[in-house]
Image (cartoon, rainbow, N blue to C red):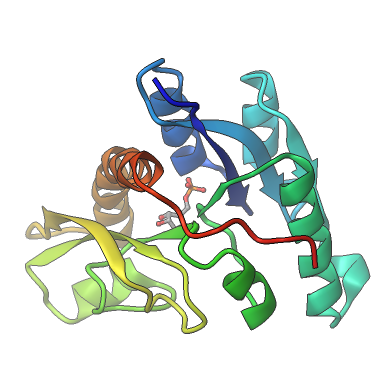
Length: 201
Ligand code: GRF
């Protein structure tokens, strides 16, 4: 089989989607491997989880960079290149990305969002879905573009909203669907041709 695509997962918190991707990639037939878990928060729980699985981790704290988003992203980009990364998966990475990073990884950067996009972009999706009285909810994996939660959709999974659902219960049901969906979407991307790799800036 051809070499597995070298994949980084960017996180800011617990990293349960990162674990789902790492577990899937442990299968020798899976077309991607997780070679780096990177966080903008040194205290992200997912960093310790990844390290315990033997996955290289890096924290690049955004706070010392202040308002210099470009400098933080340049450091992130350099770390990705230093690890020979081919595909980037955002998984609970709570930073808005500038056109610099997005354009460099165009067609190679995925995000998972807890709603059936294009509905419910942004934060607090479970609360908003319940407040609107929806009967269906779910999650989406999409390519990252400059507009938040708006890139081409690669895969979706839907879950029912049940009578009496709380945001927590609904979130847990969606998260379970996320853990199945994200590895499928990454496998599909990693199995095909990718746009040319970003050159050193
Ligand atoms: C997930 O719900 C994901 O869809 C959203 O942030 C959450 C991250 O959870 N973007 P985890 O860190 O993967 O557990």
